[in-house]
Image 1: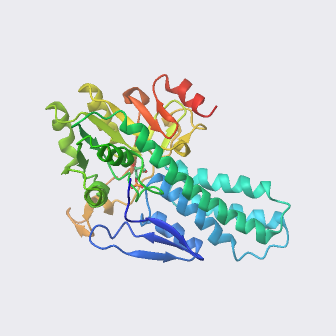
Image 2: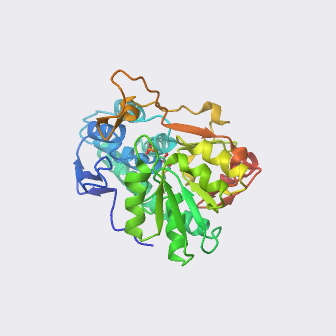
Image 3: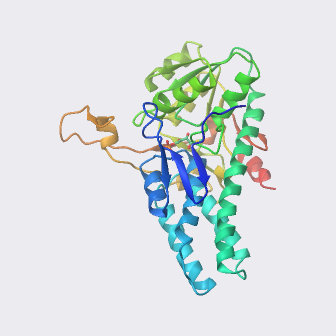
Length: 347
Ligand code: MRU
């Protein structure tokens, strides 16, 4: 599989991100030198997608601590935890963010007797490892998922789950990439994904780069396509999956899953193991991010409603696991019984 861009890269002493708010009109790579800039990039969705924000936050933590002049491990750890809390506050739903920061925190603790300058280097190395691992995991997700795809299938996907949203290749998008590379002659239905249009702006951009045949559809067209036999499979990503398989993903995922069940269409969720949150027993415990009403009342900063229109803007929804056919992970496909089989994934 190939990918011609890197959404996140570490260069010498700073981070570089492909600013996703500017795509597809402008390809702007922004340099990031401070933890505050990382927080802002995540909050404003210059970098977005569950695995990608975990990776960015990991580098951000290093940027936060690298100038610290703590005298001992205890005071260093207090500052570290302060930055962890700060970065975690940027976006609440995708668990990859806190997963990555927690992993660094544990690695730091394991090195607590080392020189603090060395501990800082361990943080940077762990961020790079999280980044590299995500690329490999996503590639494997693609290989595992492509085995489910039959020749000439029409596959519907929602939001953006490609290399922009991950270390590389993507989650659900990696399945599309691999199926295309395997000459399965797939065709993709990409939902526009209101309100921020990640499908229309980003997934189309990635599909074009990968030369995968596709059509963009309005979100509201999905049910009609399913009922008229034009969809063979749905594959989406995830931001947080509870221990019982309930899945938080981009708003609009839940109705797609319900309609898929109604129309006997397989509905798969593709994700790395870092997106499972076994501390949440069910989807009820998942915090759903609410974003600014302006994202709904405006299109690309242009108002589309009468002045003073109130809007409610939940960014994610939770799909109960009974609507999910299976999870495509780097360790294989997880089928029901999800509670039992997700537990088994982690040994
Ligand atoms: O709000 P976003 O654009 O960060 O939401 C992204 C999604 O919902 C993706 O489907 C999810 O993060 C999986 S990305 C590989």
